[in-house]
Image (tube, rainbow, N blue to C red; front, top):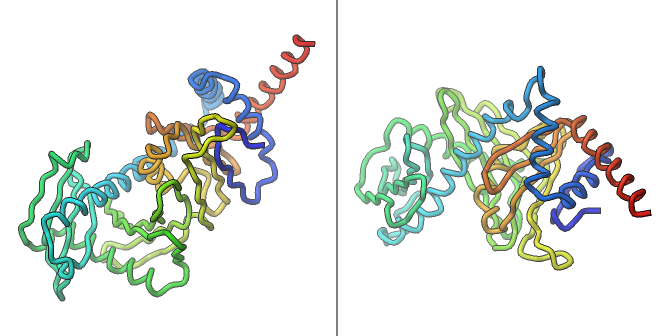
Length: 317
C-alpha cells in the first residue's frame, strides 16, 4: 500500500518490485536525513569496484537542467516581451537557449524570412527586475538560425505525425537544444491547470549537422498526471513516484528532471522516485541532486527493514 509520503506510484508491467513497500515504510519510519544517509552508505559500499550508476546518470541530470533553464527563460521572457510588444499578430514564435551564463528567450517575426524582434536575457536567478530586455530587431545568429530550423522541423512533425498526442488541458512545449555537435528538440507536455504535475507524453527528435531529422521517438509510453495540494490522513505529501518501462530506459529522463525542477516547488515536494527494472532513481527536490540505487541494494534495504521490524515485534511482545 502506498504510504502518505508518496501521492502516486504509477507502475507498469513490473512484477518483481516487492521491495518498494518496505522502502517506503523504512523512509517513513526514519528521519528523512537518516534514511538518505543509510541509502548513500549502502550504495557507496555496494558500488566499490563497480560502475557507479549515479555517476553514469549525471549527463542526464545536466541535460535536464539545460531544459529547465530554457523553459524558465521562456516562462518569464514571454511575460516581459508581451509587456513591451503590443502587435501580437506580428509574432511568429519564440524559443530559448543558453548563451554562456545567460538564459535567452528570443521572439521572431511572422515573415517569410523571420528576424529576431526581441531578446530577453536572464541570469541564474531569473529575476524579472534584473533581466535585460532588448527590443531591437536583428538577424538570427548562426546558433539561433540552427535552433529556429530544428524547432520548425519538429513543429512540422508534431502537426503531421500521429505519434505526437495532445491531451485535454495540456500544451506541447518544444525545446530546441544544441550541445556540442548534438542537435535535438525535446517535446514536453505542460499542464494548463494548476495542482497537477505531468510526466510522460514526451518526445525526442535528433538532427544531423545539416539540420536533417535523424530520429524521433516517444520517451514515456503514456501520460502520468500527479496531483498535489491535498493531504492524506492529515499528513503532508512530500513526493511522488512513477515507473519506467524498459523502452523508456533505466534512468530518470532529462524531461523528468526538467519537469521536477519546474513544478516540484509548487507541489512542495522533497523527493521523487523513478523505478526501472534495474534501478531506483531518487531525485532530491530540495538539493536538485540524483542518486541511483541498484535493485540488489534495494533488496538489501528490504531485508534489513524486515529484520528490524521482526526485532521490534519481539521486543514489544
